[in-house]
Image (cartoon, rainbow, N blue to C red):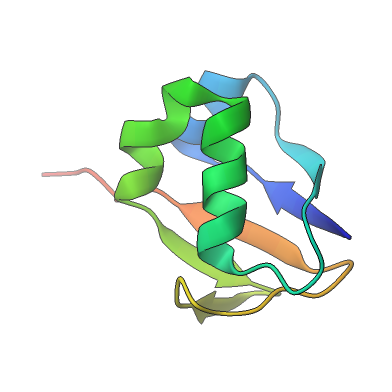
Length: 81
């Protein structure tokens, strides 16, 4: 199945794009999609570890199942001061 991944902030800088479609097995979870992205982009490992996830604009846990066509976003921690 295909999920649409959107990248923000440091993730966007590391992969050099805003979005992409990711092929993952049917019934994959957010955590499995995260692992697939790290396999594709090893430089994301440390950043993705601290990211929250959202599926179709709602926060999601690592165990959330994904469906074909879902939008998946990893939200990096915000810095500030």
